[in-house]
Image (cartoon, rainbow, N blue to C red; front, side, top):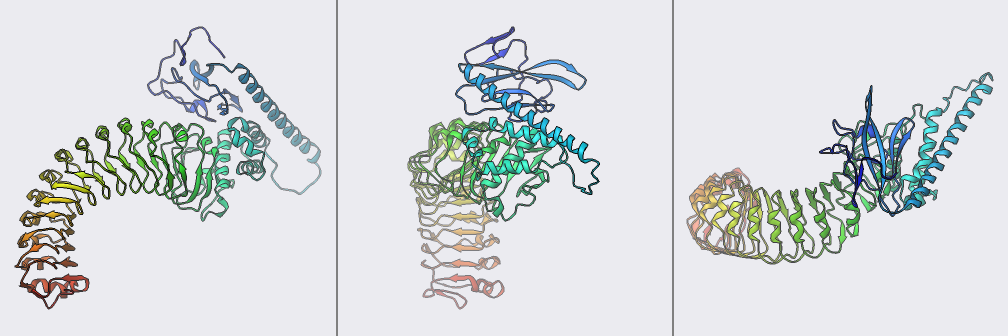
Length: 609
């Protein structure tokens, strides 16, 4: 500990003068073998601050990393390359302490030494006891065929038990003293399984302890599926609802979706030092303790649980590589977590259906990897920040059913990768920016139930991948632009309850993929274009409450998929064409809905007037 020749020191970190800095240096993790962290040309860590790493040594032939988390100072570890042997480079670990705390370090090393001495004494007693049993009991003539406890396996378990407190925070350490706690039950289970023949490395014991703690903490005995949990089977064989849980012996995916979990995910989750994915959605969990870094976690999915209160950002910021955070359909409250902008690896954030208030942070521009921002059905307020236009990676923006106001920022036009833009059911006003013409990859545009005004921009025709266009219940005026005919992939066009005028453009007949046409409650006039007979995919037409006039085109009889045709409250004086009536016999249109103004339209086949 301390400085050596060839080592320079700076206030922020210490590093080797001769070590080559790796482009992606391996990271140290609790309980992980160092040889597993090596990559070609990167057998060291240089210029890296490693927090909460307290000792590196050899135990049972495995080089391991130990961590003591409840300290008020940091120790930095540096890995350097030494002489190679027949099996490859020998990795040496050098501890470099920063700041004060010498006395605490000495005390902690003393505790570590005592734990090791206790464990070694216990191991010796086990070996001696078993030896004496074999010597004095071998000739007894006993017919007992039960398998003797493996001294290596039993001793390894004792060493694990002795070391365990040094890997836990104070809350978990205190819980070990409570025989009814999940942690205490997990230790008891580990000890009860010391009859396993093969010695189990400490990494596996820590892994099994963490999973057992989760099992007891979430009422595992009541799960609908808990196959093989807490058995001698390898933990990689224990029941999971998702993909393969392990990579080798390392537990990387913990997925228990819709499996009756109750209670909390305990601190011991951090002992799954290689965990990449945690998905516990659709359960009854109410707590998640994150007080230590989890450098490998990429996905955290907590959807549809009973979480409430303030989002624990302090813990979430300890997940530096997190890419997916899904907290949807819970009861998180308080202000929108502005600290989320300090998670630069984040690609997906879904906070749908919570009670988050306040405004979206302007610092959202820092999330340069963000692809999906989904925060619908919250009482969010304020305007959409213009800075969001700098998140060029964004593909999905869903902010439905909030209390957002202001205008649509023109900067949204910079998001050329955007595929889904939904801001329905807010109080957004003003026109649709002309810059939206740049959104050429857009597939869904939902602007309904706002206070938008102006005309439907002709730029809409540039969005040739559009499948859903919702503009209803705004204050749009003017005509339906002929450019809409360019949207040949469009499935849904909803423009009802606006002030649209003019005729229905004949170009509408180009929308061969259209399934739902809802343009009722406007001021549209003129006749229905005969080209509407080309819309053979149509299932529903709602054109009521306009000023449309006769004749009703017989070409509508070609719409064999039609199940709903509503034409009431218009100015049509006509007879329903035979071809349309034929649909009620051949294609069950009558059993669904065919509505006209029976006072003005002679229709023997109509369902309702």
